[in-house]
Image (cartoon, rainbow, N blue to C red; front, side):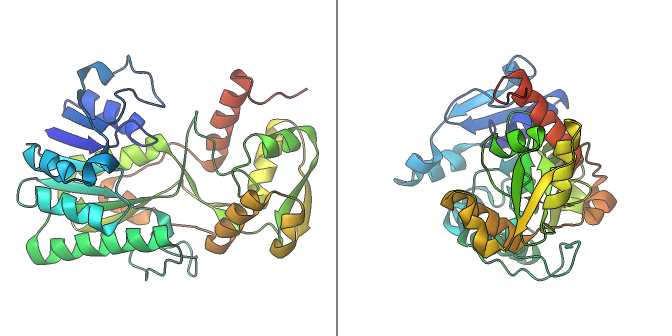
Length: 320
């Protein structure tokens, strides 16, 4: 099958492209730089057909739409679509011309968790612009499937992580190695409220697995949305325990109201933590298991282990 991957060198594409190449597909990758960011370029990548292009720049003068309309492929995987207008251009370029169109969404389209684990048929109540736009794209594609049989599938990843891409940290932020240094050395880590807010990571290769399964099993995937996450979510406290345990420690945790957490972390970190606490994602993978055979290789604990091993090997994290 001829498969077009938009944004095929990033967190998902770095794993998806080798899977598809080794599966015998002819893979075309659109990217600004023809180099994978997170996997070895010597493995499977030499067979890729590169299309070097800057989507954002080309969208401004219509060159992107003309480029897409000129491509002859069987399936499209769009990993870089963030607005309804970007999606409309892709829909118009490929309707009636492809066997499968796969869009990468986000669990932020679901909104804050109310019923957990969240199942794909639950109501969407996004609260961020990012989540609202992704929910609007999903609604549009599913409508086009129902009314025109447009061959759409939507996959909603959780917090994407990997060996060279740090997870949302156990504090619910992106504070580089700071929280890991504290947990490794027994220093205080401040958590919001009672530390029970959840985060739901997923390894980039497990997201790639779900896209590959949908491509290989198009019939049950058509007109459906799926959550791509680890087997279970973890609370912030559990994440801290898991990381501290790698260094033979119990975490030294201090709990403060979310509103007061800003006294102990930067303004940027506080905003990120607040967004994760508000959403507290916890999604079900039962549907993806049942229809696609999805079986994630990584738990959240294993995601942290792989990432921390890389931090230690690369000397980004130094532990006495």
